[in-house]
Image 1: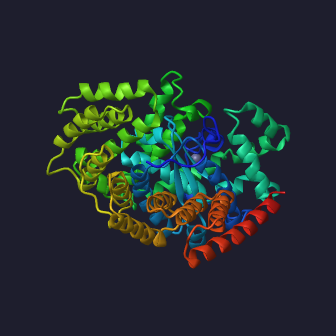
Image 2 (image 1 turned 30 degrees about the vertical axis):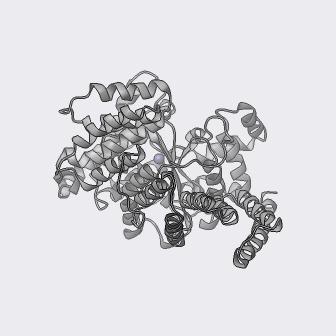
Image 3 (image 1 turned 90 degrees about the vertical axis):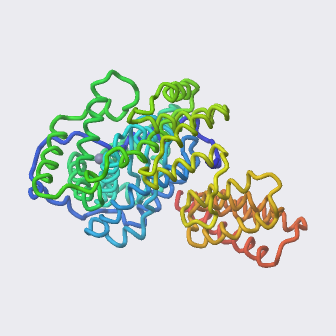
Length: 512
Ligand SMILES: [Zn+2]
């Protein structure tokens, strides 16, 4: 797990995004699919403007203390989401220009509540609590399909008035004010005092028509993407059950937007129609326990990471102790307990749980689940053979981490890791984590200027040009103070400083 820069916001600016969390809102009428027209294409904001607005908000999320960078869960969410995006492209729900101009990036948020939200420009937020409490990958996919549809149907830009869309930078700064509302009432009241924040919040609350459209079109993505459309019903049932429980604080969205029986009935009817007309999905043909194993391990991981309190860790340790090998969720309880023990720095106990987890795998365990078990071993620093040349991002980053943890690592090995990261970054220049690792490796190689350049690029990948500029300027002053660098590096630093000065000046102008 990588540390991100900055801890500027006390609790979470992100939780305040509830203001436009899109998981569920009531839809009141049951209508046949064909009777629902598309809501029209008139939108006052261009794709580029919406993306810039999203970038502005995304930059704040990267700096939020509750933002979680976890390669394993990032890969898991990406693996569920990508087939839905591919289907949206294939069936035309997502036009080519939107595919290329939007970010299609999901932020993980350390929050145990069940929530997900779409942001302008193809950014998404997924609470760890949503992953932890989803019973199946299909249920999780249903939320992602719904959120994706809010974006592909331009609900965000269409939800803003023409007036506010013409001044996106203003909207962004108002949003940032709104986001801070929960934990910083003074800042929020300052934002509200202008009178505009409230109206923008109103515009971002999606209409019932948008919700229905997100359900209807999101539903069509499921089966072709390889998910059981019943995932929608599973998710509704989970939320329905939760809403009957007393106020646990875990379902903030439901408190303000009760789940209606009509909404559930609507989706049940859709699933019923689907079941009559189509062959069963892939999911139902796979041995259930094995199909669900990877999901259960990832849900366990998300649960442990969602709540770092001592009480929560204790809970997972107790569950790990109490579980019997015959329990359906035995492997997941051992995974969670191993991770929890590791977080409480009890290495021996973590490894005992890990050994029980490993012993529970068999020849029938699917490769993806075995891989997740191996990666947990690597995290617990159990000797694990990792391949730095792998095209798999988790495998590659964990291999880099392992090398850096080795005492007395040779110069040749550091050079090897550096060139692997450089290769990776030439294909994935937006990978902030990889840039951060490159920066650390280059520091270990005693190359402070190159390390600063990599750190600057990590900042750029996290959409923070001002922080990137500061890093390049730090590199520049190292060179001016006589640090030996090759002339190409020096030229790069100078031109990047000029480029970023121009960029940051322009964005300052736009904000005014
Ligand atoms: Zn929605």
